[in-house]
Length: 141
Image 1 (tube, rainbow, N blue to C red):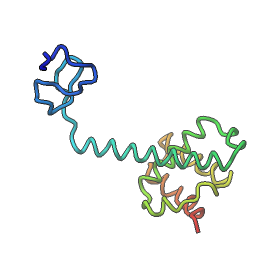
Image 2: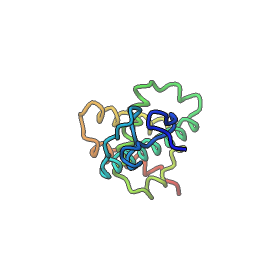
Image 3: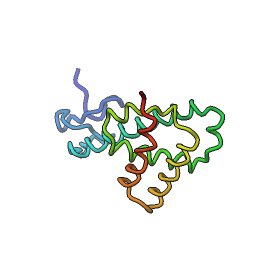
């Protein structure tokens, strides 16, 4: 049974006009293509965010009730610097960081560096370089 384009169910994602090649908008017109470069950028950003959230989760769990002493601004700065470090650190080195072993002093240092990056006092690369000694001294043995 053939349906006319106006009677396609809401879950129908592809336009009949372009033979199902490109995803369609609700009005049936084809959505613009996304370049492979843009897809790569989005994937990279998602991976970075995922890894940072995993690290934050480990830190939060390790610090227990002390975690509540950090402001949302502190946590955002920490996320900022962890994201910068993830970009510049080798994946094996990142995987070896024992986030659960970071002390309160280590966290305050990372937060300070993260705020410097956020406030554009230093570049993300410089921030990552400054954070490496703190993170790497806590690498799993």
